[in-house]
Length: 171
Image (cartoon, rainbow, N blue to C red; front, side, top):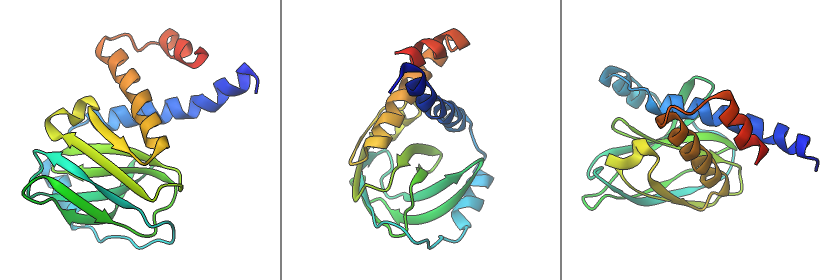
């Protein structure tokens, strides 16, 4: 591949990453969270994926898997986190796309490419807003998190300018 082709291939990822950072940093009112939680779970054709892990600070809370489509979300599945913060979410009908795990007002974004069968997420919910969580079983989600961390750090340093993005694309 030529450098120009590689640059063009990473540009959509960067755009999605910027949108995800903006979406993750926005605070939502409790009312909108309640409305989302009351939406019906959607049944789709696709892969069966087991999401599991431990979420400190989320003990005895509900956890939702939402599919992100443009600026809206569609709940896919939900379960409860146990008293030790552990959860297992068995899903079916998962198609490639952008998803998020939602626990109270916290969000963990993921990009699923359809190759996953088991995804593990471990986090302290107090640190999720800084993209500080461990994810395994989804190479696309790990790459997405890495790019978002870089963009988040640049944003935090107020260094997210066109020149910085071009430099990231050039590497």
